[in-house]
Length: 241
Image (cartoon, rainbow, N blue to C red; front, side):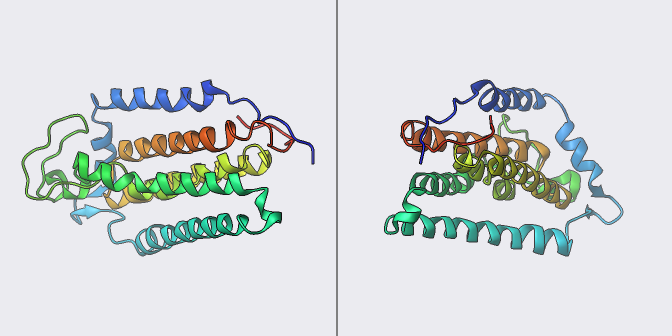
C-alpha cells in the first residue's frame, strides 16, 4: 500500500478557532448573557426550567446517549486490544490508540475541574428557585455548604468527545472524518442545549467544554499520529483541516 506523510495541520484553524473562542468566553464574563439565556429557559409560573423533568431530555438525551458513548469507548478499547494480536487490524493500531486516549481524556477531565472550580448549576441559584448565590467563573465563590459541580459541562463532553473520531480518521478516511466532525459538533450542541433547557448548565459551561475536548483530541492526534505516523500514514484522498 502506498504511504505518505500525514497532511500538514492548519494551525490557524486547529488552534486559532478554539483560542478565539477562549477570548470570547473571557469577554463573556463581563456580560449577563449566561443569565439572560437561562432566564429565557425558566418558567416562573411553574417555578422550574422548562425541560427540568422532560423524559426525552433526561432519559434519552442524558442517560441513553451517555451509555452509547461509553459503549463506543469500550468497543474502541476492545478493537485496540485485538489490533495487538490480529495483523489485519494491526495497521489501525495507532489510530485506535489515539481514539481510546482522546475519548478517555475528553471525559476524564470533567470531574476534577468540577470539584476544583465549584461553579453552581443554574437550577441551584436563588434566581431560579434554588438557595445558592450566583458567581461567574472568574469570581470568588460565595461561602456555602453545598459547592457547585457544574463547570465544565459533563454531558456536553459526552458529545464533544467525539472530536476524537475526527482526528483518528483524519489521515486515512478524510471524508468519513468530516462526517465524524459534523456528528461531534451536532451531538455536543444538542446535548448542551438539552441540559441548558433543564437548568443544568449555562451556555459558557458548554462552550468551554467544547474547547477542552477539541484541544485534547488535537493533542492526542499530534502526539500519537502526526509525529509517529510521518512515514507510515496511508495516502488519503480529499482534504480535512
